Length: 113
Length: 112
Image (cartoon, rainbow over all chains, first blue to last red; front, side):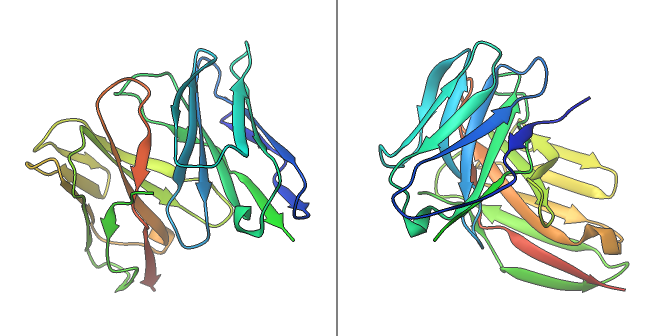
């Protein structure tokens, strides 16, 4: 079975540009979450979607937005990129509900220059 | 944002040794999770704990959910070289679809 797939795996962008990251959850999983992992830190929660509705938002500026599609895949958009946005962006999927662990993808490594 | 407390940042052990890692929080959680991350990969779930006081094993790994719901520990017995990686604890509050709050992680090195 395919795990959580993210694309692209690596990306280099210039300050001020916009970027879209994509995530396909495990088949049957209806919840998708996005996390930002800066080097040397644990993942930080950005967004959570369940059944195509936003269910949670972390402490990130409005430059960050996301959506979930009818097939439960998801996109994370970041506008007006800053150098500090350079990080590993992780997508995690779950069936939904407290007693289901999240499965993470391998992430998209974003470098802003 | 909030992060759970994990220390030390790095641990170095000899192959065959046991190692214990602790994770603490100033607030309570209803679920505690332990993940392992290797270079170029996302975190992989090792153990999930759902009840205060719960002790759960997964092969050579054992984890416990603290009684106060503010801490958890992970023990790895008879370490092997493939145990190398970064170990993260994560807490989750009650309610469906709630976020995970992670610690900063502990980098484990195993000397053969």
